[in-house]
Image: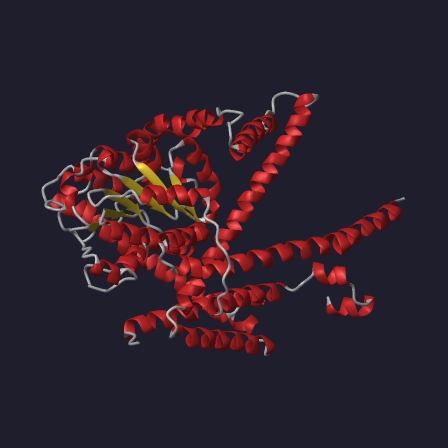
Length: 235
Length: 306
């Protein structure tokens, strides 16, 4: 398999940066981790800057050059945002900010009420018994009972006593079950992300010896530095 | 800790409560890399949400236009299998694709899979694209980072596409392309949102495209977003979702194209067993040593007070 110099360089740098970051697991700051962290932040900032300049060119300057002069208004509003860096004139930045926030709020209000309130309540109005489908029946009952119990947990303006106290306690357990699910799904996601990245540095197969070799080098160097007391100095 | 054990003798509960994290992490690496290098066959069950996702995806026609909201590099690592498998289906169906992004690295990820039309660099699916004669401009267009600007941007796209979009990412005017006749959300057959951070149903695409114009909205979700998105599936705003890497693997299985998802399924399964084992060990350690030691200390402190 022929690998281009570009692909090879990208892979080697990525593998080195990866293992350098993972030296964090040694429990002490290492120079490799510091290098990787700073490189990551620096490259990230550089990339974002270039992308933003390119975006301003394609979406702002190019339309003006094509004769769409109303885009000048957007450029002026954007420049007004920079007035924040001069304390004397920082009030000017409120104008574009107010326009952006006001527009977003106005546009969001109608849809938010529907998607996050009315439709959510509507989704709770479901049959308690589904003929011939026990799974759906249990699912619906869980939804309705769990939802109602949980709502009582969030009633703060009434003293929680009698039936309300018990339903609120049960609601709390429903909440824990929900949070447990969320935690498990987050774990699944993180593990999936980790696996995805491990695949990235071990696939295609020519990367495997480099991945293992660089890992051994980086960790061995970190451990040697630790033994000689150099981590405190350079980490 | 070693000195303490030597002084007080070995205590299994205490050892379980204070396992050095280095070894726990080392085990994660061993399980992950070991499972990737030496795969074993573990059965797979297709989830309800994946079935829903696939049922909509499989109905795509060559005349349909799909809006593709990209994934960032970190999200891609998680939803890689679903990302590639979904694009594979779109290419095989010959449906038109419009890619858009709201973060800088999403375009690099898209080009990593579909290739870079400017430089001619090939991507993961280039061979399939050549086989199906799926070409840039004729079949898919990359609009670049046009989803910046929040609510107003999405509303503009949904209601006045031509007024907002003029050219592709490289500055080429869209006149003469299949986007020439797209006037708004109603002209899209489907939206696929890859790897967003939170519940996508409450996101702009869900509200301004799916809710207002009944565009089929599918999500390729990262783990954190699964539970919030489920509520939007119940409301009908989101029609189906792939649940992180697991959902992607299920889709790979359904379309008969094994890829990174199915290869990673061993890691997912063994990783979860490992995690369950850690929870059990941690709890035994906590109840057998840590809590007991704390209670004893409290009793001692209480006694001194008296």
